[in-house]
Length: 383
Ligand SMILES: NC(=O)c1ccc[n+]([C@@H]2O[C@H](COP(=O)([O-])OP(=O)(O)OC[C@H]3O[C@@H](n4cnc5c(N)ncnc54)[C@H](O)[C@@H]3O)[C@@H](O)[C@H]2O)c1
Image 1: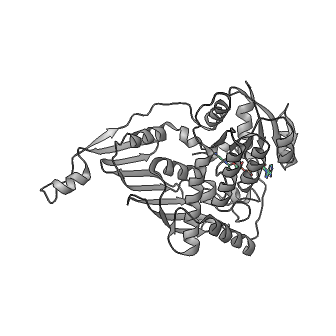
Image 2: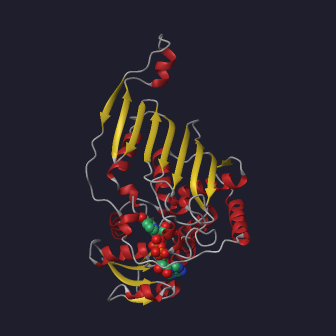
Image 3: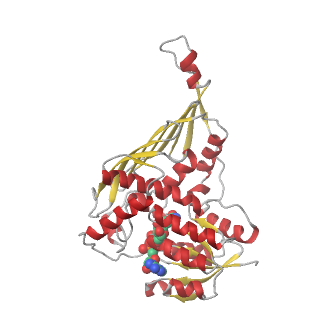
């Protein structure tokens, strides 16, 4: 095979944005051959491709070697499983599924399919600043991690945003709020850089700033297996909002804010200084290091190019979709902790969380108001 024929399932805001760069030929070695959407109006979007209103038909049409799934999250699981059962490669939008048990079902179908490529759209992994931090951490420049802190309250959304789609911000349609829609990127990055916490204690406020039934404000405490602790704060209700990641290690403190990495690097190990210094009020000397970051191609099309290269040439994936279970599990753990009013351990009991989510769906009395809005530039939604 020298050209991967791609079909996009779900050509709403994000799916049509993927279709645009594919149509412009920005990804080499592939061709957009089909689209699918349950909304007939969305099928008017692309010329010269086969069009389907049912994903099963696209998957069985023979028009595609691979699918890019950009539907609301619950369908990522069912459509992904169907695609693997029919022998297609899959690039799935984030989150890979709504909850851990669905992630496991999807991953099981991938493993059963064998030799298929399964990638997730975590385009933040292509951002040079995050790649730089990852390298610093892997090289041990910061020493053992002691504390993490990510306040990401810059995901501001209006009521009009939540009213724009029937599936948004309900337990039944989306399975969560800011943790499931905006934060999968942050949570993937948090675990990619700092690892998966072993215990989560969270406060989630449901519909604090918006008329929605799911969470739009979250404050969580993480405990990691090595004793490190962390705080994760997220909101869609604050403006102007903050986006500040701080990682403290045995060799100093690293802060990412406004796209810049500030690294205060201690001269010696802090643990050793604590143990050996004769001075009661002494502190380790440190240098403020400016960490250079080289510009490089980044964004959605880079992940899609990597997916195509993985199919054609076996290139290692930037974001293997199996790793997508971690951000889902952390998000689920935060929600479950808030629902139960107690800490939740990871590995999470996926069946228990699924049962709680289904209970919320069954007991929901929330009436969703949907107000159609004009197409907006998706670029305004990316961070
Ligand atoms: N990677 C990113 O930066 C990023 C940004 C935005 C959204 N997303 C993800 O993309 C997905 C879609 O989000 P969106 O904002 O584009 O939503 P959207 O509502 O704008 O688009 C979803 C589209 O899917 C269609 N659809 C629904 N069910 C379908 C089905 N069973 N088969 C075929 N089509 C179906 C809808 O008609 C709609 O056109 C979500 O999972 C979201 O998390 C990712």
